[in-house]
Length: 481
Ligand code: DGY
Image (tube, rainbow, N blue to C red; front, side, top):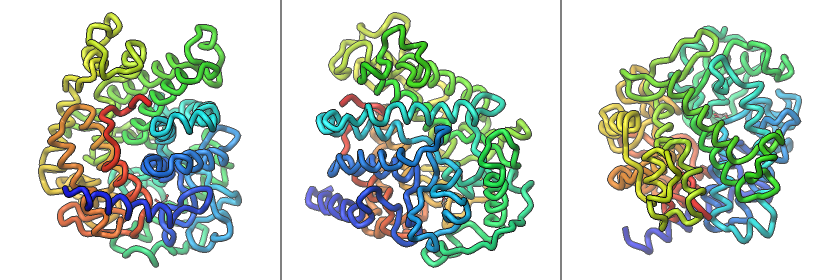
């Protein structure tokens, strides 16, 4: 693509982020989403870091300032002055934040933000400011949120970030579509009804949110929805590896002294890596579906796997290098790209050795199956863009939110995964998604067949991840500063 054009796109993306910046955080969209959203802020910081690294750091610090005393990082931090503009608002929660959470992309985002400007990050003591808070956030997920197989459960479809994915249909069927709250839909002023969840969905969403709120947001009270999501779990594993990187960069955060292992709160790098390995092993054991060739959700209430093919189940491809990858790279050399393969720790798996050598790890086993599913007819083999729900799933709808449209964050996640595996051909395919961002006005999502914009426009993470897709030359999921 012509360089001037690329610069125009980056400028246009940066302008969206500038418009949506409030001085402390970035709203996802000024009309539809007028508050701070948790995983949005993580993706936004990943893009903002290229042009405004101090702002990217502030974005994450502002979110973490709203952390609850139990460690949870809330789904929404409300601008109480705009409480009528989005529902449910602070009035519903009787709190300045929602009691729910969203996928834990934050530690990974913080590490990427640090890598973009290590000097500025050091000047502000950024890692020291965020590391313990992020570690406490993960402890909340590993503790009160741990379900029967030890993986964190989401207590509401809003927590998955993929609200109306077919993965939640069966569990939602059991929730009576009756809420006590009068439901307002300000969202429908900013996106078509055929592009947003329906009123029956909303009655169930409210019913669950009321039950959780009325239980004081306690996690030991069953409210009728407890789902393990492969996207959520993958983010936790990648973020756990990011915490390991941070711990090694911060001597006083448990950077590896043996006595630090017992220190509790912060933990140390080895503990984070062991946790990531446990999470990945459990995900492999309980969420893999060999017929569909991807990971699926697990219903923690019934113990049943939800056999639906969605983009959520492809995201574990990010972990194809294996959870030991980070350790092998760091132990061998701070500049992994130039380290001879032979310096990898004895017994390190082949993927880790290859990563140490700066090569793409060999693609084996489940990674190969995931790549086949990604390129198969349900996903990239069936049309130009990566749909949120497989084209072969009976619920597929190219316009309806998470039931078909292609989202920029999931294309970005898979882009990072295939780049790390050295699959430049697939990186080019996924990169095409970002080419339609500016012409379509930075839409929330697009039709996976035509590329037509859907949902709201001037959407912050679309702009941010377009910036990152264009400006980042990182090939590793977890780069070095
Ligand atoms: C919405 O309102 O659609 C959001 O996904 C909730 O976080």
